[in-house]
Length: 293
Image (cartoon, rainbow, N blue to C red; front, side, top):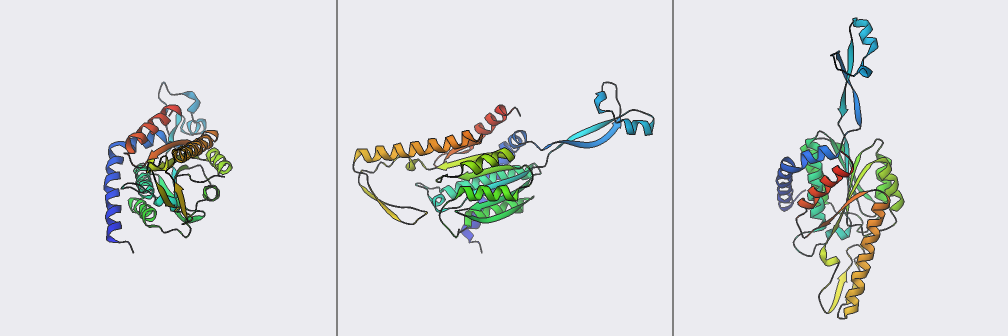
């Protein structure tokens, strides 16, 4: 049973993201993500100037007149949102949590797909696949996905991206568009990501909170790991402690970027404390240009 507060949040996301989609993202989505190719549509009488390669000689012989084949884009896509619901996505240093931003971005992507008559499915994961939502069309289906992401209470708080990607590979039989949303506080998913990106059009969104890159409070801190639920004491009173922390985070982020680049996965880093719409628009425009779409 959804609480009234959660229903209000879902309704707010629906109203906001539908407006963004109708004003901005729907056309962008259509131009960036194409269908599977072209398929035969019909035959029509030959017109002077038509390409003779498309003459249907069998029909022309039967009708005793020239006819040409017409083709149409096979537009319909299957879109899968693979969303992290592990403990670390419940983090946010200001007013927004990573899980809320994941729900909002998923909403924009899903409504864009529905607007273009595509089917949308979802996989929610922690250190296992927590929920599989088969692809369907329709606004109600999208709202159910958003509701699941916002309200889902995973059985585990840990993360295993590799398991989620391998599950995705097993359930998708035809080429699809994959949106992978996570903070990517994990490793060991390099190989499965490479296989996924070869079979499917894969895009990754890495969410981060700026406080994860720097802790400015000059005293002892007790931090709780949201995935293991264990307390860690950090002596931040020494300047070197903060430097080491920053160095570790920078190296880890660079390692994740290298994984994406090595496997030819387009990715966007989302600062959850800022407006994510402008960087998303810029990202998709660049992607359209780079992929020659």
